[in-house]
Image (cartoon, rainbow, N blue to C red):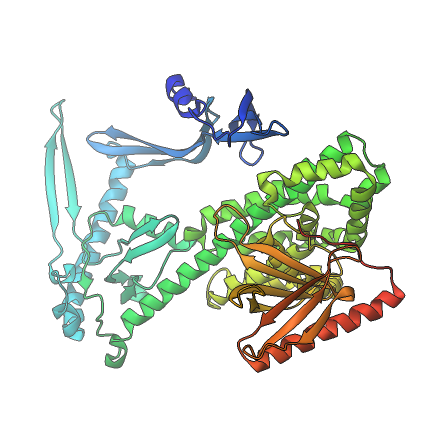
Length: 630
């Protein structure tokens, strides 16, 4: 039955915020509308704030998205009583979904009925009599085995904190109930000298298991005339979770054994375990618990990483590509050269892979499985070959359009100002799909490291790893080149947008801390020195929050730079850097110092090699593009 949420509550929860951070600007307009989240179909309330900057030069848009999602299970149980006894039991479980508009059509998970015996029926009464005789025979046989069991395991029962149900004589209680119509109903309750009920207490905080409690359970099982009696001991304290089959067995045990008694054994002791192993039980339990927690964190990182990656694809596809396509800035073939099959990749990850990973993550503490999602969908990763092979051409087209297409450059600048661009050049996001397949390999290897070969997800993880490597096999050579390029992106993130370091051919050679000697006061200041294969960059650490971590101090083009031995008698480990950032740029000379002579020698050799190789390349290729800090 659909239920409509309280309208006042929804308005209160989704009303616009009282204050908006205008950053010193002026609020021009506020728009409110609704959209549908494709991942779960829930309605999302969107509020857009159009703000004029404080200097009146730019307009900004701030978007606030809020969603109310309802998801729960509803269970009902109906019992019919005939002649004072349960005659029919109906159980129904439904999963309810809803949002601010109310609940949708529920999904029926369980719908079953169980008919019990009708004692007014002669056939049912005859069957009940036969079962009663079988039960009495079983209880007699069980009572005969009781003393033999206690004599065989005397220490087991002496260590129990509570009295064992095996020590009690099985009894049958008869109760007569007078019905309202004057008839009588006889009820018989028999105690059984075995226990199969399973109990376990677990506590989760933010999806991470913090505490798990369980105890040794001892019970006797009757295997029939041929199988006889069998004693089992189960230590459940080392099991972090149950598989689906075990969970079903436990549920059945709870229903069948509602009147059974449980015998408890001290948590760290059991007479069936050798004396030397007793002290190792708590350590083994703690080790398994930690391993399971680490496996869960690795699985969670796989899902979180996929969510971040889908956001990157959305930026490239729905924001960048769609804007270029709508304004018809580029021809159709140029758009294909720039974006390749980015739309297909976005659709695959957003509508197929990410929802499946999120669903497996929600059930992970029950199933302990997530790698089967990648194993089943790994063949689709071969779509990346088209994008990977096109990447070099895409960066070339991007640079050409940035220089020749004014409107293209404006759109790129507008997108780079958005928060989802993370203060990085837009071209740096084009490499994300190229690195994604190998990223799956690293995530699966980290997850597998915390699995045991006996775990249910171990085989699927190995299979998924093999398929991921197979999908990336044809791009291995390009990936080796791009691994060196990853270090350039890390430096770019530290510097922010003050300078653009992203270039397909640029790679980081060496980085480290040096001291700059001030020419005016001979004092020293700490600097970060980054040596690339075509330039040298000097930066300092920022102290103001809200900006990039490092600030650019100087840039030297490798073809215009010189490195000289220091002549400072008081600073024996000093050297000079001379040069400029471009042929028309001002010339600079900076005196630097290292902590020891070995570090100084390594820096001088590395810089000299880069200068020599850059001059050699200059003879065969055109001069590098001018790079200025601002």
